[in-house]
Every structure is written in C-alpha cells, then in structure tokens.
Image (tube, rainbow, N blue to C red; front, top):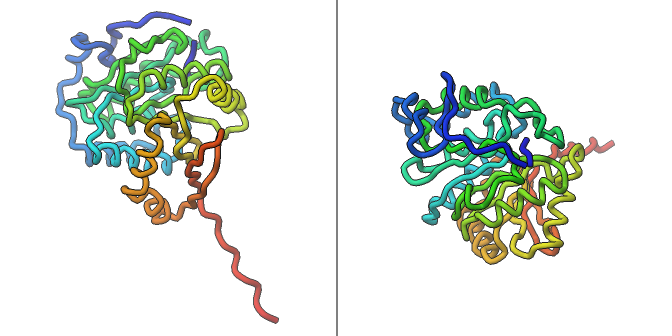
Length: 288
C-alpha cells in the first residue's frame, strides 16, 4: 500500500493510539513500559500474527528472520525502512529484528488518505490500526518514525542512509514500483537488503514491470533470493558477499530443515535462490 505526491511529514499524531513520529515527539511519553527481550518480543509477535490483518506468509517471516540474524552475526548495523505498511504485519516483524538502542524503523504510508492511493493496493490502512498493533507488541516503540505522504514525495534524505533492511510494498503500478526501488537503492547500506513484495503476484503485474524497468535503467542492484511472495535484492557490489553469507549461515540447510525446496533461478543475468514449498511425492503404484 503506498503511494505517490505529497501530503506532508508530521511530527505528532494526537489521540490514544499515537506513535512517535520524530525524535523528541510528545507522543513518545505515551509509552512508558520497557521493551521485552528480543526472544519474548518475537514470541509475542508470533502469537499475534494470525490476528493482524495483512498479506504475509509466516514462512517469509522465518526466512527474513534468518537473513536478519546473518546480518547481525556479521556486525551489520543500520536502520530499517518500509514503504507501504498497511496495518503493520511486516512492520512488527521488523521491530523484532532491529536493535532499538542503535537502529530505527522509518515507515512511509498514506494511511488515512485513500484518495492518494492511485493503484488501489492495500486499501484500508489507518494510523489507528497500525499504532494499535504496535502497542500490543511493544508498549514503548520509540524507535519508530512515520512519514505520512505518497512515496514519490519521499526524498532519500528523509529516509536517511545506511538502511540495512528496506521493505518495498507500496503502490503496485510500474511507475510506483520503479520509484520505490530507486529510493530504497539510494538509501541502502552496502550490506543492506531490499525486500520487495508481490513480484510474482499475477494480480499486480505492475510490480514485475516496474522492477524490469528499473533493471533497464540502473545497474546497481541484483537479485539474491525469492520466497513466499518476497523478492530480496542487494547491491551488485555486495552480491558475492551476500552469496558467501548464505553459505556461511547455512541458508539452504535452514530451508531444507523446514521442508522447503531451494532452486537456482536467473533474473536479468543474475542467479538467485528460489525457495518454495516442497511438493508431496506421490507413492509409487503397487507392483501388479
């Protein structure tokens, strides 16, 4: 769900479900409790997951968690960013991945301005629903910053640099996808990942078209892995580093332990790992 020309960035949102938008926001005082430890926070998210409205496979969460842990193990530090949050189903997973003492989560969405949603993807997002879900997960999300505007009005400077995990799930037209990929690429950490939604979703052909257009116009990204409606891209300059990372942190073995198939596929001349559900093998017919 996303968007594209501007409303404006806001520094507070009033009301009982408020979230802090910028450092020093008065809304931050609404959250007085201590954030639970990472393992408990993820367990809480897992329990909440079925009730959070949105489109996300649990398998994708586990695979993204594995990639995040690999980044952390290699000492990669950087903020998280998201274009298109809807009601926070993936945002909350990202909150369990980051280190709140060193990393922020910057979220861009139009939320309560559906008239700006020209591609009609992810209709129904509201700040109230997003904030309500966050409060259930973490009563003190001071690491969250919101940008409320169309994504083609967001500048790289507003996102910042060194983003190590960037979720792109905004407007689903080709133009919107291409634009959002560009913003993500310009703000990405050298060892960062762009996680794109709906590339393989035939209901939204504009996403694949936008990515293909991006690759025709720019030469800075490469595919790394695809799984459960998510496609992970990295900087071309870091592709070998990431391929070694997958091997070092046993990505294929992790997939196989969950009974997922891992196959090699190619996009625009680059090999990537495609993960999918293993198909049941039919038993051989009895010998007559």
